[in-house]
Image (cartoon, rainbow, N blue to C red):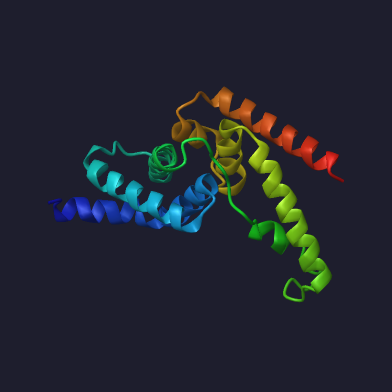
Length: 177
């Protein structure tokens, strides 16, 4: 059994980032219940490894564990597929009526849902390395160094993947207009 010091350390390092962990798992699994399973597994892994945490960015450390847990879960439960989230609330919120974000009309809601579906479909078309880099940067807000830590690739590769992912999204969304 872990000591009180390790439990306290776990609480201070992991618990503040559970929302980000769930968000990343949701993007990687495309399912809320599956994301919860992944985060639970990641938390167990983090708890077991808390004594080995070398300091630094706890958020990047946890998201790396979530990423590894998600891919392990996907290999076990969906060997041939890796998908992303069904809807993008942030895109829908961005289309709220001008001047009053709470006064969405049925038309703006329909437009927002359509845009979210198009964006989600375009993200689904991205190869997994581009998709995860895009999500870590543009959804999770990690910087290049943190993404490099999470994914285990050089920072130049992170920048290249992100640029390529964005170009592909623009091209895909531009084709559909």
